[in-house]
Image (cartoon, rainbow, N blue to C red; front, side, top):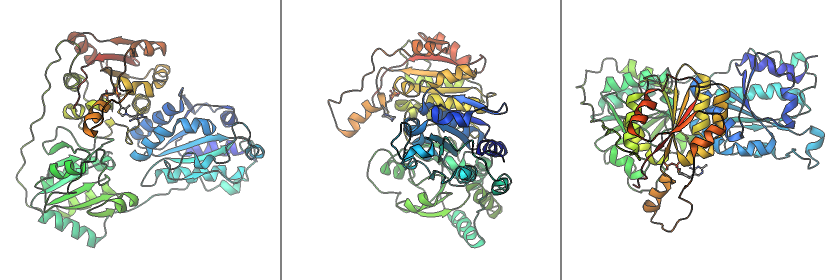
Length: 530
Ligand code: TPP
């Protein structure tokens, strides 16, 4: 009879899960025993890095990724980035090795009786199979659950003595061929209602979120915005870039506060939110939810998000399908006058070091090849990053969706692993770099085309700005003297240099996409407080 291990590897092949992101321990060795040649093991030197590498990989491929962590300790190390994956809806099958079944209840080293509770609440589902023979079916359930909208991470605990057990082939014979899909557009009545409201609106506005950022949805939403000649905002706290940033209808990123959103939507009579929660605020600035006279309808895949919102109507449906249906229903809409494009910010040329972040990010956007992907984890400079960002298509930007630092470095590595044909630039704060630094080693091992740009301002800049906003003072722990990202990167084997002049910066940024393997640039910037 085939073993649990053989059966599982066969199933992983049929699901395309042949890349395993992991960091091993004794509990996982029986799973990895005789690792097949057609599988690839991507080693991360810390589980936080492992998780976010898988996240970046899955976000770029649009397919689930498989993660194998070491027991409760490794799983615990991954929790911050698991929160980012959950907030972004990244489909991940996260696994961890459990002690041998007879030892779990004995308080043994590396045995965790409460293993399934460890990853909560950051997973859609958490499970330890009751029998060894249930492992293949449990992984099948995990794979389908992660992939079904709303997509997201799931967890399966895998006892180490299960892998050598025999499985009755009849029990698992049908798992490989199963296709589990969700269908879901608008019925006729709902479509007529929504199309009628859009056609009748004087000033419709679109707000777009991460669910729009894929190959099916992105072009349909652009076409819908053009049909309506509606201004388009990106929803606040954006983890992705779901609309072309140089399109004349794109207005920018909504601010993450209640009052800020209402202020920016002023003049709208109907707000159509596509594929975003309503809304992901960050800073508490109370005010009206919406401007006077505006109504809101949100379309998205997550019933939880739809139910949770404090205002507006919601429809739980597939955004690509709905956008297509609305385009057809509004085919005869009389053409509306084209809107003038908003004025775009123009960055000054960088002067002498230390530079302004605005000048560096403006030069970066002008210098890199059009197909460059970005990861942004430069918290104090997110507004400047977005104001210069020039992205025309989907899957071009990743950002830590739950606000957890330690995502940027490994997510950039995962994105490059998924698609090494496109260079990746990770814009990182000097503080943020330290949370996921171990992943630069993986970039070296796989010779991935990632440029890590560390903006050295010597402080936790975003927090110095919050000090003013929250009205606090005398806060310790916000200064970062003596950090040397260049030497640290070199210790992991990454070619690295500190950029000292505008000429050097220009030369180094122009090299993006033209060099082999990873490199790191440390760029001195001024510490600005907003
Ligand atoms: N720990 C984690 C895991 N995530 C966080 N978001 C924080 C702490 C709190 N935090 C938010 S912004 C920030 C910190 C520590 C400062 C980051 O500093 P840096 O990366 O240097 O970027 P800057 O704000 O200066 O652009």
